[in-house]
Each structure stands twice: as structure tokens, then as C-alpha cells.
Image (cartoon, rainbow, N blue to C red; front, side, top):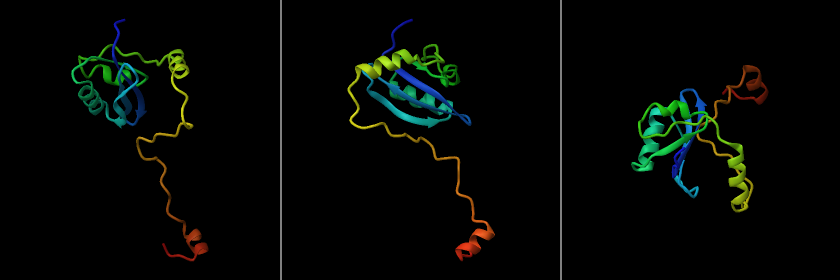
Length: 124
């Protein structure tokens, strides 16, 4: 396989969307993580790559690989050995990781039932 300086991990976010980002050869962020429809994602990744070829990886890669000719064949798996090696050789984190939410939650607060409103003494 040829070496690609740019790598785009892509995860199927369901509901017709993917989570994606673009990283350079040293792990530098070329396009910060985002959520988008596959056609919008490919446009953003290509713009960030500035004409360079890049490799897709992750379970969402097949959703993007047919959309543009500049992209290398997709891998549908991210090799955990490579992730572990990357983590072991990188600097120790200054603090524990925090979640990165790229879209709003699906759960919505429901309206109070008439009984709950009665208990609260409100007419909401």
C-alpha cells in the first residue's frame, strides 16, 4: 500500500451522517472533528487536504469512498495495535479525556404531565 501523509478517520454516525476529521503525518489536525452528510463531509475533507490525496479509515469510510476520485481505497477497520502504539509513544495527557459532542442529543425533555403540574402547583 502506498503511504499517505493525510488520514481521514470516518465513523458512521447513522441517520445519514458521518463523524470525520483530517490529520497530517504528525497527528496535526487539518480538519477538526465534525458531523455531516457524506457529500458534505467529502467536500470538507478535500478542501482541508488542499489537493493532496488522503486515506480514509473507519466504518464510515465506505460511505465516502465512492464520492470522489482523489481518495484512496477505504479501510473499514481502524487497527487497534496502531492506536495503542500511537498512544504509548505520545506524551502523557495533562488531564483525562473529555467527551466531544458533535451533534445535539436525541433525548428531549418531555412536557410535564397534568399530574406533575398539579404537584408542582404550576399550569405550564
